[in-house]
Image (cartoon, rainbow, N blue to C red; front, side, top):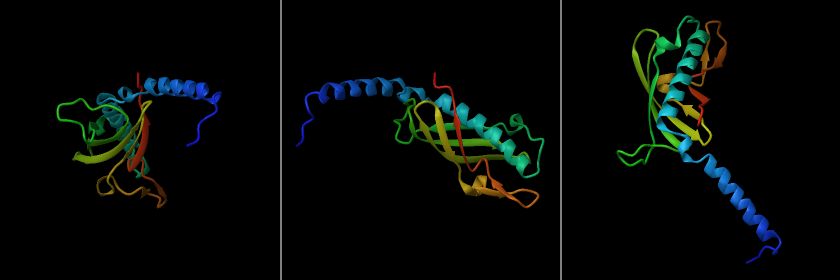
Length: 152
């Protein structure tokens, strides 16, 4: 086993102390269920409006979409308040353009600091690429998306 030189040990200890402080500042409590649900709902609604415009259906408003997310953490004990960075599952409910209530389960990867990546099922939200009215392929904004929220 190799030992560090004596002069390097205090530096290593100081680095560990700084790392501990930095990691505790963006610990698991900055990602909470209410924050994540609000951010996923708002981000999805705005991107759904964008998707409809790309498909040639302008005039859809985020309010009409009425997106609502209900998020859980896999492995969270029943009755426990889920929180923290990592894997989440969000059931997104919204109103489609024709008025039909729609639900999709999104896999969400939340990161410390308040940002996330959400990926929806292609069978409900469509493929990663969609075709606009002029025949051009464009990115489907609701297939997978990133967002952030204020973690404080």
